[in-house]
Structures are given as C-alpha cells and as structure tokens.
Length: 115
Image (tube, rainbow, N blue to C red; front, side):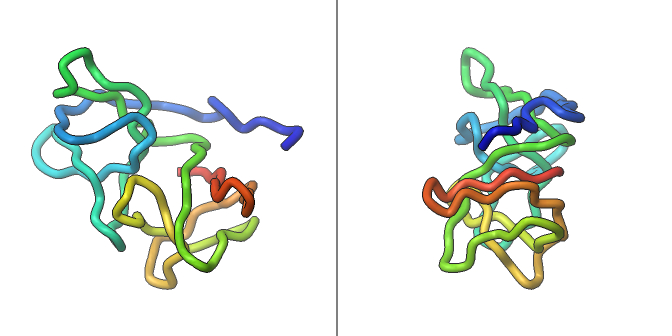
C-alpha cells in the first residue's frame, strides 16, 4: 500500500487490563477495565501498548487502526459491518457495527478502518 493512515485521528485512554496483548481488539469489561472480546462482540478499541506489569494498557479509541481479520469473507472498502473474531482481530458480521474500511489486504488478512 502506498498510502498510510497510521496515526490519523488517533486518541487513546489508559485502562486496567488482564490477558491482553498489543494489537488486540478489546471491550470494556468493568469499571475502568478492558478485556479480550469474544467472537461476535462489539469492540471499543485496540490495545496499543501495555504497562510493564501487564495490568494496564493504552487503548486506541478513535482514528484509523490496522487489525487482522478472519473468516471466509474479506472486508471491503467503504462501509462494512465488523465484529470481534474472538482471537484479537475482526470478522465481517452482518449484525456488527458499521466501520469505514479504507484498505483490506486479502493476502496478509489485515484490514485498515476508522474506529
């Protein structure tokens, strides 16, 4: 891809967490906490960094992100319904939220979209 969307509109907040890794899509799991999404869950953002002890993380809540996708159906450019795939990425889901997809790499199975 010749164009980069990295950092455009990015904003983040710090949350308590457990069992997440950088790059995982997460959901709010309690007061001030995030956790991994199950398959089909709506997500609030993507973990962009972990604290030294792994019990706190920065979560990108807005802007463009790059995420892995799974499933037989690839996301398409334009408005696309996505949900969590249960393994830290996304999947196309007819009941998911609409996101603006700007790039989908079917070879690497990654998608770039706006939160």
